[in-house]
Amino acid sequence: MKGRNRKRSIDKGIVILALIVIVITVSATLLALQLRSDKITEDVREERLISVLIMVHDADELLFSELFLYHPATANGALLDIPGEWGDVIESIERVDRIDTLFDRTDPGEFSAKVSELVELDISYTLQFDLEGFEHAVDLLDGIDLFIADPVEIVEEDRLILVPSGSVVLDGKKAGTYVSYTDENESDLEVRTRHQKTVQSLLKKIGERKEYLSRENVFDEFSKTFKSSISKRAMDSLVEEIHRLDADHLILKSVHGDEVVVDDQTLLFPHSNGKLVQESVRQLVDALANTEVISEEQLTVVLEILNGTTRQGLAARTRQLFVNFGYEVERYANADRFDYEKTIVISRTNDVLAAQRVASVIRCTNIEQQQLVDVTAGAGMGDTAIDVTIILGLDFDGRYCKE
Image: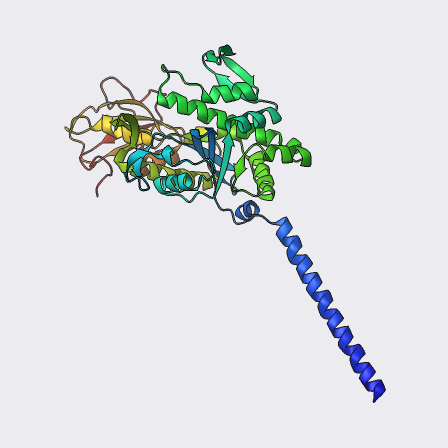
């Protein structure tokens, strides 16, 4: 009996020991998987769009924000400028105001949620630099490369800062000054373009310096330059993806609209109550996922818009529609006659897909290849500056072509 009891005790001990080993093994495996995985890695594995709201602020003032969109399946990326003067109803104060009034440097969640609402796109992550951190990040990257068309002279704290024209490398201090200075002779669009180009250059340098940033002490220092909803491990994965990105060919988009003075401040109200912005973002997301789209040049299409109806100003209004979608309109005028029943989209290059993308904006199904006849008195179809000509017909209601 004693022998049997001893054997049962030994067998029970072996079972318990085996269970302990199994638990430890499973726990170690799960822990190892957790350590290897992060949200960005999951996004990449699932080929989900990655969206990062990048904000740069000076104390409590938001200087600018850019929505960075990246599709891991194609390594295509884009920057959408988010103007702080975008006017909308701010529910917390129950009035129409600038959306950047929502910005809180201690918690950018409310501002990010408003941007997400306005563009109708879930924003996955936020990345927030104060001006000092932005300057330090630029210095860690050994400066950023920019092309500046005209020299800039900035007086700051009783000293003159000169930023020369041409291709220059800006250190942290000059980069910070470049994004924060104001010039009354500069339009709002020029200011936003300056900010957007700076972020583009920053992303490019992050990609180029991936190996340097991967050093633990450097990455730790770089991580101190910003606040983010992205974990440290996920940020390392994001840097890896930015390395794959061709930053020179980022698609750059701006928000266009009407400037209106409200309570002594100028607000920007996008056309069609922001619906065009939302449609443009949807089109942009589709383009980033398209494996055939590999550069901004492929998406840059120069348009000619001709009014083939008796409705005055139709070509001008349609021009603004396509500008909101990021197209360049070289010319808008009257067509050779004013009785076109159907709208025609004419491809004047071998890129028929470009004409199809243009036609989809206004839901036009009447697409033709280049013709050998003129459609305007002053512009011939042989003008190589134009990629696509649109002749507006009676079926066009100002937004879409009716069946």
